[in-house]
Amino acid sequence: MTEQEIIIVRKPTAEVQKLLRAIPKVDAFLERAIDLAPDVPALLVKSATRKILEEKRQAILAGEHVSPADLTIEALLPLFQKQLNTQLAPNLKTLINATGVVVHTNLGRSLLPKIAMQAIFEVGVRYSNLEFDLATGKRGSRYSLVQDLLCELTGAEAALVVNNNAAAVLLVLSTLAAGREVVVSRGQLVEIGGSFRIPDVMTRSGAKLVEVGATNRTHLRDYEKAITEQTALLLKVHTSNYKMIGFTSEVELVDLVSLAAQHGLPVMEDLGSGCFVDLSRFGLVKEPTVQEVIRAGVDVVTFSGDKLLGGPQAGLILGRKKIIDQIKKNPLNRALRIDKFTLAGLEGILRLYFDQEKAIHEIPTLAMLTMPLLEIERRARRLLRRLGGNLAEKCKIEIVRVDSRVGGGAMPEQGLESRAVALQPLVMSINVLERLLRKASLPVIGRIEDERFLLDMRTVSDDEVVGLAASLRQVFGA
Image (cartoon, rainbow, N blue to C red; front, side):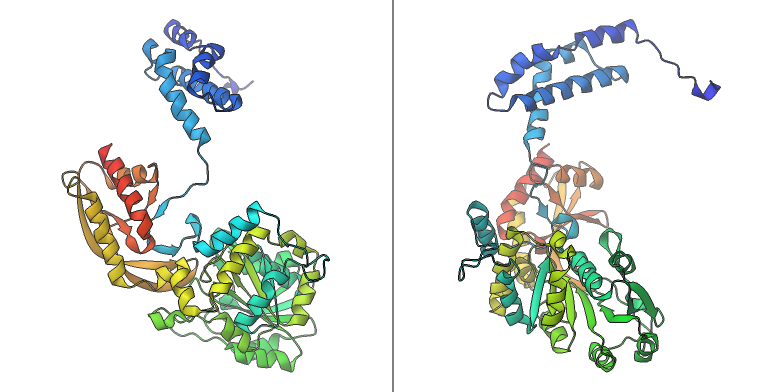
């Protein structure tokens, strides 16, 4: 045994041993604890009991200040109740998004309208025709439930929905290009959140990547030179999460489609954050809509359901019927299929799009992106009235101009003028305020800029203002 391997175990001092013996026995503590939680399962009561007793034991061994009075059952009961409440509370909980990022990946992305949530509730508490054809009385296909809606809205011949856009890209490439080459511009080999990279997905699909062009400029002739007998398809990736400016050039989709047709090849476009509405009329950056891509003659297009579309998490695959039928037969499709809740929510969203003006007002993502500045300011002033003047001695509060963000990897350069309630605490640091709000009964997530904690009211709904005010009062009251 080397000198480094010798472990010295020190025997607890007499005082430490006395404190350890003073910790109540589990059975003795449970006799009181069960009375405090008569309706809670015994397993959870025991778990909470063991946890707080073990925490005290570790605190004593670590040399923390613990007195015999801290170890009585009466002194430990409040800790038990707090621990039990923590264990009973759901891990996935609602919070207030005051960051100003509309499609916030970490906070659940798009919010669903009530009509979609009602549809989800109905199919959750009752049986449904998920895979049953009511017309024939025979087994049906879950994909048919939204395919017609998607085709009517976009002009596509056929459609398929899987559980997210990464799955959609993987499934298409696996079906059309396994063991063969896929030609893509070097400037479009994007990485999105969670280290999802187009080249990595392509490798998993079995397709072989062929990069063409330079990072900043790719020409039609680059694609043409790369086409061989091994080429399976031409891929275009919409770079929605970053913008390249300066000496740049990329091939228009219609030109790529024309070149592919000359060689009998399909063209695929990964739109990422697909959208059915041209938001440029509201002053936002022009993003290609799904309808425009379909009209350009693309053979298959993929995009997310929970970004600019404003629906539940899903990967939508639209295109020519011959290709979509091939994709449906891929065994991988079963592993990636969506459930009845996603289908119900998605159908609710899609039906709103038949009236675009109604969709803009009722789909929360679109409503927040197009929200008038006066409405945001009105909401900020309503919060100030709720807070009253009681916080003046503890915090400087004012309404300030800020820029919100689209989020979800869409429109990275797009700033949305907004209004925020800015907090400059006088009794604690900015970081302490951020932590306390994050841990409040109703958590609040904002952002720190210029030594101020900002609550961007674009992403705070009218019915959240009361809860937001309550969380602020709780934090400053503490």
